[in-house]
Image 1 (tube, protein in one colour):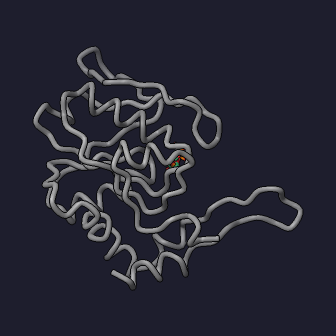
Image 2: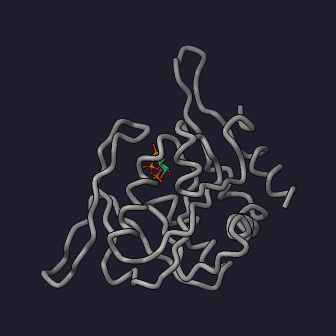
Length: 181
Ligand SMILES: O=P(O)(O)OC[C@H]1O[C@H](OP(=O)(O)OP(=O)(O)O)[C@H](O)[C@@H]1O
């Protein structure tokens, strides 16, 4: 998987002009690269080789995109986490949580349809990037309330500001943000 590691670094860009104080991560080059699309699902799945997940959880939108690739690699399904979930009909029941301030200082409402996780499910969380860990922590709460079990988080880039979260939520990554600087 060293090809994957090198390809992720090669096709990543920081966007920012000289007059800008901050820069933004551009990951779109990853999705354009056939080798990455082929390898990233198996690569993330391999971060938890001994844990036998029954389902992948991925937050909208890039967590769901990657989550589908990981689910395919593992031969399981995907539980999609929606932002600002809307109930369609009375019987459409959701688990909902609000995040701590995330990397854009947002308190997001995240929701998971109750039909998507069952007690006995073993969940692997997938996302492209973790920064404050606010969305990650909120997804852990969704798993807890559903009665399913949390295996850990497989992410592409670990930019976690809090190392306690890395340990407590079992965060494993393909790259550390330092490798992109
Ligand atoms: O660690 P945190 O501070 O919670 O931030 C990380 C989250 O933010 C980004 O998603 P974003 O909400 O930008 O949505 P996107 O996937 O649609 O780009 C990223 O994909 C993670 O889900």
